[in-house]
Amino acid sequence: MKLIVGLGNPGLLYAGSRHNIGSSVIKSLARSLKVSLKRDRSVFSVTGTGSLGRHSIILAMPQAFMNLSGVAVKALLKKYKVASENLLVVCDDLDLEPGRIKIRPAGTSAGHRGLESIIEQIATREFPRLRVGIGRPPGSMDAAEYVLRGFSRREKPLIEEARERAVSCVLSWVEKGIEESMNMFNSKEIK
Image (cartoon, rainbow, N blue to C red):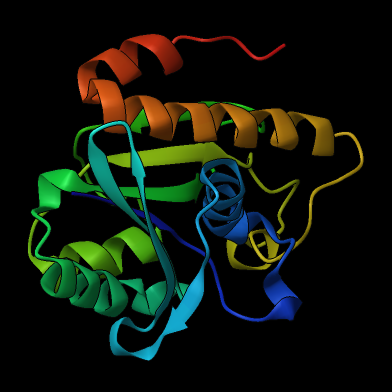
């Protein structure tokens, strides 16, 4: 069983924000795989189950604010009895330009509060993560303010392409594993 978690903040206020790109990828995956998403209060998330080839999958969007994502992820891992290597967290990344994606088998939080919360709650950094680039804030804008903003008209096509590639990357991770997915998606150039 594979658990794919898309990070974001709950509520309509944050729906189109940079910080919610992980949730956006989950919604696209759910449409693509015809998975119905429903609120599950026992795991503080919106979840849906389905299959891809021979793999059972769980899609989840924590309904806690970003810096509390780990509480939901810990509950999801426990409920579905999923090992951390079968968890893929999809999140935004300030250090990747808009349109770029990068999948890794493990690592630090790199300052991402959602990843920090997950690492703290599940007591390991050894879980795959797919980062979707949102770019750095302009000038002296505070990063916390920047991630809660929407994308510019110029960025929207890049983000849409990145979301589509992220969906393809998740499907690849489920069926082919982390190494092949890294080879296929980490080196691709932005159009």
